[in-house]
Amino acid sequence: MRIVVFTLLGFTLLGGLLPAGDSLAQDASTNTNTDAGRKVAGICRTCHGLDGKSRIPIAPHIGGEPIEYIKSQLHAFRDGRRVHEMMTVVASSLTDQQISDVAAWYNHFEITAVLPTGKTEDNAPELCIACHGTTGLSEIPDAPNLAGETNIYIETQLKAFQTGKRHHDIMTPIASELTESEMHAASDWYSAISIKISDPTPSK
Image (cartoon, rainbow, N blue to C red):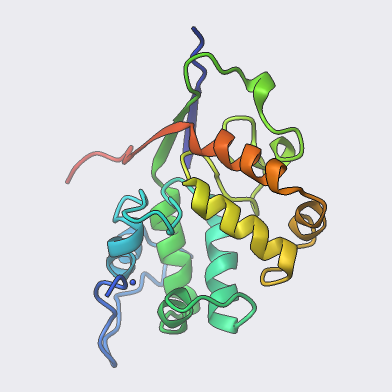
């Protein structure tokens, strides 16, 4: 993943689930394969887009997402540690290799984040920046990008951590202390950031 940051001043939605018995070609010589990952991404494209830019408000952007984060969430959905009516079904059909491949596919995209005019990185929510960055681009392998996500998506996840629907060693204690206004402020900050997701590899 390559990340570029600019600061300006002044599942029916599931699309095509693989039919039973279908398999994807694997590259035994590598741990991941973006070509194979692109095929797996066909089941993700209706909600997340083939380039990882979300098509619906309740689905996150995943283009340029840290590879370890994508893998950990897909494993969590598949294993039942994280539950979602759509993602649980999708993840349950994936092998470990397919999870690695699709994570590599989405991770290889380049994401650019641009702050709104008149905002600086000094305005970023202090509790979030160590992991998610001032511009919403992940600072650590196991944290997602938040740049450009919708208010409803960010607030839904914060409330899931706060109520125990989701658990994370870092996010659960942070969310448990947040007020409604603090959740709104963090969601507003990251949702106002503009993003561009592009494929840095030459067209074939």
